[in-house]
Amino acid sequence: MLHKVSLGIADINKYRMIEARELIDEVVNLAEELKGLRLCHINSTPFGGGVAELLVCHIPLLCSLGIKADWQIIRGDRRFFTITKGLHNALQGAPFEEIKKESIRRVYQTSNLTNARELDPNYDVFIVNDPQPAALRHYLPDSQAKWIWRCHVDSSQPDGTVWNFLRPYIEEYDAAVFTTKEFIPKDLHLAKMVTMAPAICPFSSKNMFIKRYVCRELVENLGFDTNRLLITQVSRFDRWKDPFGTIAAYKLAKEKIPGLQLGMIGTFAPDDPESWDMHAAISAEANKDPDIFVFSNLTGVGNMEVNAFQRASDVIVQKSIREGFGLVVAEALWKETPVVAGNAGGIPLQMTGELSNYLVDSVEECAEKIVYLLENPAVSKRLGEEGREIVRRNFLSPRLIRDELRLIKSLVGK
Image (cartoon, rainbow, N blue to C red; front, top):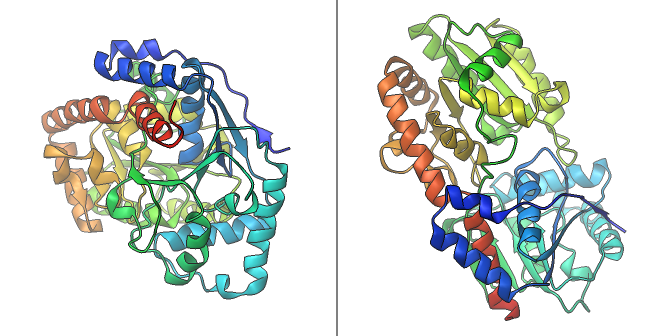
């Protein structure tokens, strides 16, 4: 059988301190109608990526509401995950010519078939996340469950060859979920397609309140000078996050603000073989400047440390060139830290109003906005406060739970 991630049970009522009463009441009522429903989320890694980040909080909340929620992880070897990384990139528009080879397709299909045979089938609803396990539904044709495919990337302009390979598998699902309507490929034909943005958990170790002086002490212990300004990018080691664009913007900003420091905090995930080469390249570039620091989840910088960096930094940078949503943007805004981010994918959903002035399309624009915020702390403070309120209203876990339960109810009834 596939591995199930063991998690505790959360308490939805904790959110009554920060969320609108009407939202929590709706979530509780929806869950009451669906009480006892067996729900299973499936993805390809238990840590290191945005989906895993979501599910760590999502599953315990569902369980607290009376939903019998589980999380199963598919298995695969390095070759399979190298192929699925190619599929992941291709959904965001990168070419992946390898998928034309029958041998490559067979690896993907065989792995999904093997995982389908090992999947615990005893659920009423399956939610399959991203392309790695997308063919599971195909290999369980007799399943009486409802199947939902959840796409977490910007699939608005997928590579045509890869999309033609994946689309028939996805069209076997009962519903598909995308972050925004712009991400829905125009030739996807399903009876039900909905949009819902991801969300963060404000009570997790990554987002819980920590006093800023503690955060500054932590980053000082890692080598930073707390008497000088600090900007940080937190992301997977991934080309779509444009880490070298961030480093270039930092160097330009440093010409105006000598002594500026840059933290590059990244994560490795078991399903992302490209991350090692990217980490090596970033580290080689960082070694040219003693004020650039690279840390990862493999060197002891985990969720609590990321929390500290996001609170201790003067500006958070997220210079993505493709982005499904960008949970790190919501995380930073929740902590009232101003963000300069790429004008890409789901990031503009989070940076509305005055915050939209800090969406950038070039290295030069990124540097200019960083400098402006560092030189205008009153503006930074106002943007941080505005950002936290945007996240509170739109991007906390109960809203995502509500959206998911609404969709499930529409598929299964009571």
